[in-house]
Length: 385
Ligand SMILES: [Fe+2]
Image (cartoon, rainbow, N blue to C red):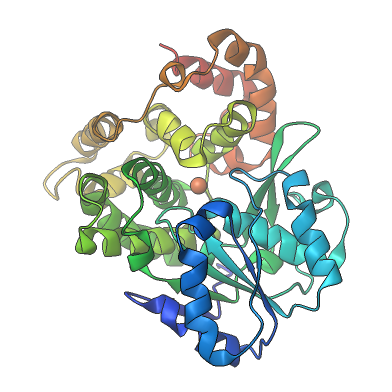
């Protein structure tokens, strides 16, 4: 049996942002706080939201100080803002980092405390401010998940927080917001979405519902990832990636992510590698490691992504999957850890700590092949071969 959690309202397609006034009205919100980042202000996205909301004649306040790969201290000002204001909803506008920040602000602004108090394995289900998520990248899927990731300042650890409180009540999934994304962001976020769909499908928590969402996501992402990277104005590819990313979010929210994400978070925390990029660095090696325990499932992924055909047996399909993952990283110019500028000696010094943090997140335990700390260390080292 599977327990499924979804946003109550989803507006999907070109112009979905224009539905925001109706969504706020439905939710009886008259005092929303827009939580976003400086980039969204500079690029004019916040003005677009203001324009859309103008007919409602309500005050539109903005907190634009969220940061990439958020930490507990980075959201403190936002939490204070919510504690002192009388907001009745949060509009989370941006990529994964603003949305994840907004989720933590919505919960901690109501209930206080330290981010560690909310970390996995606790389930956070108490009422929080309703969140309306407006993603501007096709990647995180955060608009449709009950997760947020916030780093602890003291330990440099990325904490996974889980619970219904973090599930947006509404998601406005508008691919037109992604048309001007730079190619690098398109690649990193797109590979993140592909990883969500694959991990949801091979996870030990996979179920018939999450399987269908994951397969649908892979069918959309496989043919459109490279297209969107090479031509950002390709509306068909952008639409496919956006819906694919949201469906991948639905898939892993109701299944789980697995070893790639477990190992990716510590790399992000220690070396400030964007989330999608650290996933991309790990995906080929972790897939190769995991295939022996879930050959048929990975072969299904290869076929759904379009990297293998219906005529390929599982062995062939998995060889083609590994080839495709490597060639996508090359084509989308994913740097190696060395190319990214990570210091090899520092990486090797912290690899055991990273392995412990990966295990503590719980995600490796959902992988079809469950590694121990030593195997995770070996996988980290393999990134430098
Ligand atoms: Fe992710």
